[in-house]
Image (cartoon, rainbow, N blue to C red; front, side):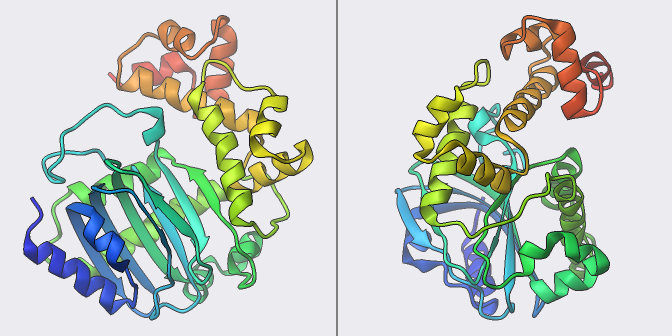
Length: 317
């Protein structure tokens, strides 16, 4: 249960890092759970669960006290439980765990839908501080540090990141060195994320307009809405309102893989969820997401999950 003290702590935190949450955010969301840490001037982390009472939009603003900040916004990373004060429910595809990466100096419009339940971890880090850890590896992520670049990246989460987030949310706080512990946890999250980002297809990043982002997410939403049957390229082009070359290029830039590979990756993540949470057999999971040939399903599952579905199921027991 969230207390007045929890809300006061949140306001103290956002004021301390120089971040304006805005009147809409303050009035139209119901806070379920929150935990926040600041390690100024390099880093800040917020963990929260909240329900949107009334639909609204807002423009993000950069925290004033973290220079050239980059935001890593981890969404749907932890399950609802008694700590968040919300009822546990099975995940839907719309609730899949992912992270958004974007530069805070650029303004982004966020849309909050009524009754949506947001469970998120935000890590806000100074670009220079992040480069000091990446050192020579920073070169392959150059687009993150280009102050003129307006980018958005979405990454599907790995088990390592999910485990780390749930450690932060669910484990008891250490009795000593609490700030040091959570700073290390924030950096651990970023370490696992950059491991995942390093596997992306190499792609020249271009500036994205808000219209570009909306169009590419319409394509993504179409893929998500029908995992048993993909939309045709002609359908996706019409949804995006752009030619095929531009659509493919921007999709790869945002999501780190081509349209078909992304579609297959989503299917295998859903198959893994069916095996893990719904306790389906391998054949049942394969058939449910549209595979008639189980040998083909096994090959695709192993490519995206890293092991055969039967082995994956056995290890869950």
